Length: 381
View 1 (cartoon, helix red, strand yellow):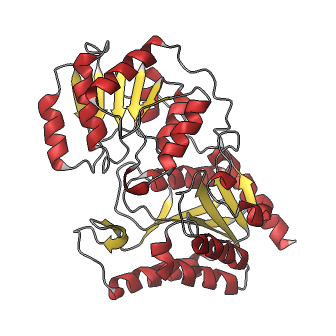
View 2 (cartoon, one colour):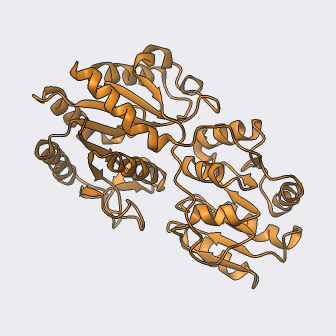
View 3 (cartoon, rainbow, N blue to C red):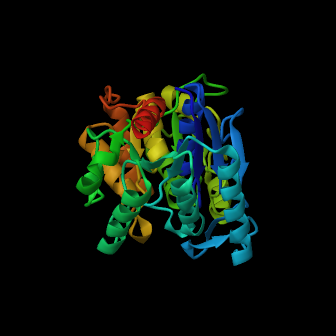
């Protein structure tokens, strides 16, 4: 069955949502479907993959006050007219493309600040004469501590508008009901795809013994500076180190990092062969975001994770604990991280065997097209 697919993704701070959605859209295209990716955030190098059809909305990102504030690329708070232009462009794209399948990343579990355009989009899809399948594309672990009424509203929106919830995880690591208490109420909608992990690929340039990374870098300053301080204290002091700061590392942290690095360490903003770097490295030091974890599982690299936990964030701590429980990573908490503690963790990780096969499904992107087509066929019947 051939089908057209419209995938909506909004990244507000890091690049994780965009990276995952790009891999999924690429897999949908490779499966022979016509796919268009709607992008709501700032442009990011290397995403999405070349050749994908895209629709770029007037971009917004999170402001200094957090996810509740939307700003433009210059950091100015956006007004109602700006948001209206986004909404009109999104609805026009839906009307023009007439997709058989509409995939919305995160909402209604997250991205609630985008409901000004997503609620009208869902209403348009529900009224469409060609009755498109509507699917939610969801990472495996949700932020905890939400108000019960918010979870109830999420279920009500799913019941009203959605046909499918694609959970991009493996329940052998963590199931949705671990972080969404009403998961049993939407069980008929849920399909686990496996973890979305990209291919290893070839190493494009120089390999390194230790790779330090923090996603987009917006919340990576403490990790980067602790790793820099740990270098001379660890058995890897003379190894080749690469610090991938990400494009959003604060300028003062970037300057402090550059000033403190010895000759055997280099920095870069990002790289297109990250998974290959990990596959050829002896150790990774990182946060515990979804995409980094997926890349590490693909690469089979020794790993120290320092999960981001400020502001009550729970997702990365949950993921790191689950991976640690399977013996796949070492964990240092943000509260404990220091050059001395991190150096000790480096020596322990290097002295231990590399992690064995994860035993987790890492083909989430490849499985998604078949699950979408299966659900579309069932809806049409």
